[in-house]
Length: 244
Image (tube, rainbow, N blue to C red):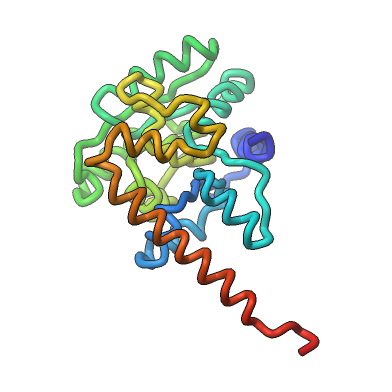
């Protein structure tokens, strides 16, 4: 987490006029989806910072010899960066979430971090990404606000695809995908308790809480992820050594 925060703060405080930096997170579901959706895979690869937003990714990285220190969720990274923004004086813009989630989240975060500058909030209607006029409206608001950090809470894979497609048009320094973080910050959704996160069973808690909505994601998505990791390990074992 600290490494991700340091990298992001460097981008946010920089005066470099290069295109905005993209920050995304990967979990078992998204890695599985990237195997089937070429554009989404391209969006993930285009990210300047890609954190492990799922304990399964951390565990798989260790199994495949590419260990990661810890899980870093988009929501936790967003909150840390809001704290840094209050200290350093750069502004934040919230896009997405349930109706009123962005506004409520902004109010709560400003109370938690006095001095936090909210450049704006927006909750576009469902399907807005298919409407060029609605997209232009959002981009126009962003051009007027010119925030340092844009937090996009449209849900995966929509948020990552939107960030990637409009990267060149975004007048910001960095963009972070945050999933349902605005909803949970606003109190409109309940996040899994800390003990389930520490034990690595947050997915099970969420599945039991919302089985109809999440059973496909976790039962099918996690199974496919396990298959992909098993396949990778098997191929590595069969690969001849350089001395062979």
